[in-house]
Image (tube, rainbow, N blue to C red; front, top):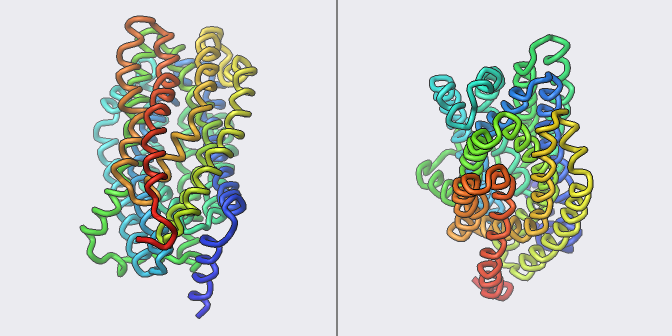
Length: 455
């Protein structure tokens, strides 16, 4: 009875609370989670920069590509299951939600184990493929070993985090992620300098924080705080449910997969035209840009469960209102941070690496990346809208525009004609092209949404 009452209260909250209030309630914990996650990624970059080696700073960008591969699987299973779970909860079907949750969780664990195994078997070729130069390789190897050990926990954590968010329990997800992030920021200087482990200490600190974060997120499920339950017994119709999860979550896999390829190609092209200083500069700019972008992403992820729940409950007017509000909020927040980034670009880059060549390359790159932040809310919210309501075709297409269809040709070609400037402007230019492409697709979808209550 208590479980049913809790489910009814949550259903009423998700389908009747005023849209701005609901998205802010869900978006604030998610934004905090995203910011803390990016802060501890930036903490690695900052503390590694204190080692006094530009090659070590470049290694953080190389291993970021490896982490993107792990994230690709975690987000595919997590976003796929989360979208299905929110719609089934909107239809008052918690049993199906538990089955999707269980399948996605164990699939992520197994995928993470495979990444660990294959990563250790082909470590040097993998890091070279991700853009490592010979001078960066030793640093990247020392860092990557610990990331590979933690891969199963990282992949499964993304699943648990996304399911919590899609259930409308963003606060619980925030607790797990922020605790791990804070511990990593504390652990970096202890292991790197207190224990004299150097860049290996940054890897160990990140790995331990990921394991602790996983344990906290898992506790939320095992202690009965969620509607969907994790159990081997819930794994029924395995292949059909896994296929649904992969189909729905594939846009996330495509987005993260292309992001990994984009990072690899960016590192390679930066090394070709500017050496280790360019790799380090673009790694720093990417981390800082992702930190700012996390604000828009957090608000967008607050919108996802609202879209999924209300689409499942056939309250399409709330889906529209949620989309418009999220885009507007994203423009205000990202626009403000973009202006700050434009003004203080050089000082921000200098915090992470006091190298004139790195600062020179990074300052212009950061400013042009900040300009592109103004088009991000529409791109992010449209993609999240399509994925949350199960429109996997549109979601996949819009997810691969930014880092795939537009960025890859630009980064492959522009550096050969305009050198380092081509490396610096490729991503912002891809963002602008993605924005122009996504607008008509989104208008068409919103215009064709049925009236409330219609199938």
